[in-house]
Each structure stands twice: as C-alpha cells, then as structure tokens.
Image 1 (cartoon, rainbow, N blue to C red):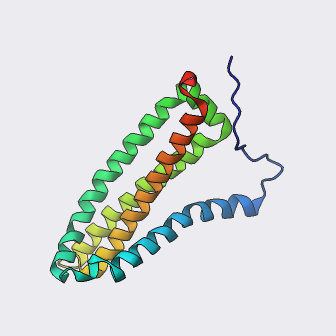
Image 2: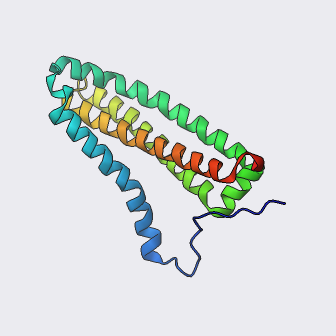
Image 3: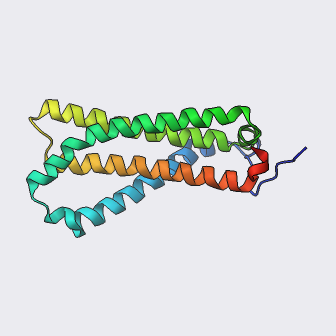
Length: 169
C-alpha cells in the first residue's frame, strides 16, 4: 500500500481562524485579477490594441460573449472530468490533502468568470445597440482573468499528478 506524502500540507484546524478563512481565498483569487489587469494595461496602452480602429475593437467585443459561453462549457466539462478522479486513488489522495477542493474552486470560479463574460456581453448588447470599444476591454479583462484561473488550475493538477506518479492512478 502506497503512502502519500507531499511537500504541502492541509492546514490544521487549530491554525484556521476567521482571518485566514476569509482573506486567503480573497488573496488567492485576486492575484489572478491583478495579473490580468497588468497584462491588459500593457496590451491596451502599449500594444497593438491602441493601433486598431474603433470599429475593429467593437467587432472583437461582439465575439466575446460567444467565446465566453463556449469556454464556460469547456471548463464545466473539465470539472466533470476532475470529479471522475474521485473514485481513483489519485482522487482520494487529492481529497485527503485538500488539492481536490482547490482545483474545483479554481475551475468553478473560472466557469463563473466566463459566464460573466457572456452575461455582461449580452446585457451590453441589449442595453446599447452594439458593444463599444471600452466595453470590449472589460470583456477581454474578464476573459483573461478566467483564462489565468484555468491555467493555474491545470498547472496545479499537473504538479499533483507529477508528485503522485502514474502508479497511484
């Protein structure tokens, strides 16, 4: 029988207090939002985005709700695939160490962010005749934030699978 040991440990109940349980998720998810903001600022103010005509920017914004809905479906499919890991040894070990919950939270938050892209895009399309270039930047930021969450979840899953090795599947 293989014993799972990891370099990270699930925090003990004694160390958990209200500050940690409230601020840790806020810091955990806001770093992705901050990184998305920095990338968007570099792209909008210093990149090719400012060189595009306003009509092209608005056309790109009209595609974002469709892309958001499609990506939300893919992320929810990834959550379903991750949930099937629960019956394997890998899934049980991930649940015991707390990684399973972290990955689920990341993926579900990414699905919510992609859903926000869709909802915000549809509401803007109904409210205005079309999506303006300024709203396109907001939709791109939401999409970038969701994409960073998915990439982080995939990276964490890869680290866990590498740590456990193929024999624990």
